[in-house]
Length: 212
Image (cartoon, rainbow, N blue to C red; front, side, top):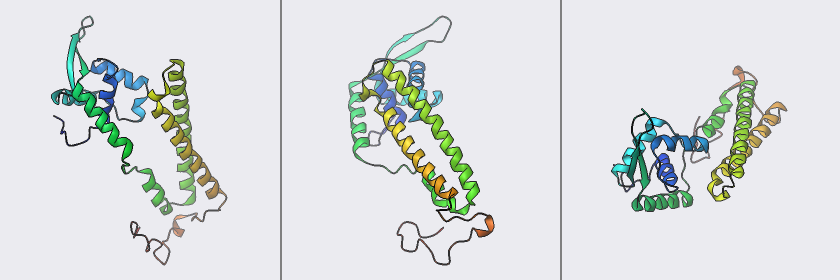
């Protein structure tokens, strides 16, 4: 059962939101999430999805609305959102929209510690990251074209627009950083022997970063 005092998981919110469109069984939920590229914002695995559905049902946020069987396949249970589930969905989305949360992404840590690597290694890794962002932006472009082609109102795919814009912004920042490293505008050691910390602690005046 889900603790009413704690926020729903990201997948729990996605399941409730999807069921506002109509009853579905978990397999259909998974297919829909993948088709809509929601696996870009939520970690969606079949096993985790079934577990989440069971917990939502135990908490009476969703309920069984029917069962069906296709041929010799196992019987499948269809779920619908309850009135309690709708209220909980709205409450959790309100909290997420209005309150910034530090989710501790790993890349800022990598950038903070990149000075421990020689210039060429940093450049190679940043170029690889830029290539990955190019591929991601291509995927977002396809997703945008798909929803536009279905005449889906923009309010239903703001996440695609947000992720596309944020990815483009990060790629632009990375490209600028690579250019500064290549031109030696940004001071950086070229080999492991030069990777020595400065004689004075450059973070001594920082309340949040006191050492390396």
